[in-house]
Length: 267
Image (cartoon, rainbow, N blue to C red; front, top):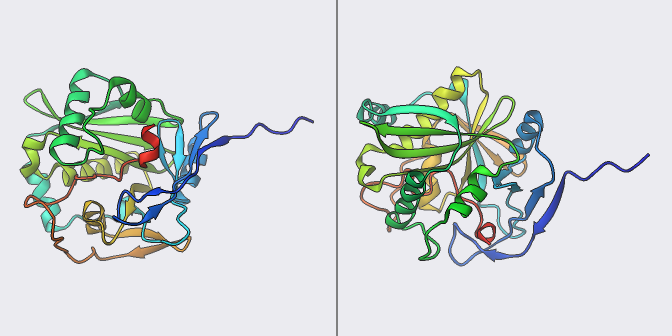
């Protein structure tokens, strides 16, 4: 009997500068998926801390550091805070549509504006169509997008990966001119509501890092669960509000909205 075909192949596994904590070294092996993942299998991999970029999965494997904690929201139990309810009120004029994840020049331009004007670019080169399609749309799972518009004008796009019962919020980008709307918060609430309407279980938000201002906000959603030492622990209260010295006046929700892919994936 022939040996079963491998499901994945490690493309990259080298130390690299940590994208979340300056001065530290990270290790995030990139594993190319050799065939599409079944929805139930993807649920299991999300529970182990996996994230997707293109047709690859990755999770942190840093030997000397455990600061990155995968974080997820139990959809049925989630209760918005007062400030999160304010974000809903501020965006009551926004039209939200869910559908297949697709490319358009309008989306690419909005993505590049968001990265550039929010100070999130690792280089001066804008993302190309090939890179956008390679990172977000060339997928090994079922991937959808949620589009946010006002009077027909696109102001935000969220990319979401779907399992059988769970979903992973891959990335959200928005018009920087609309920062006062708290669109990062609003999009997370819309994704939760959409997943709840489908009978979903968990919404995965990527990584939480206590000392990273771009990721700290994720623990403001409660209850939430974080994977610590290989076990999921529940936190019923939001993390205490914290002001970082270099934080923007408008707040950091949506600055690195769901935790982007490792730098090695850009190659």
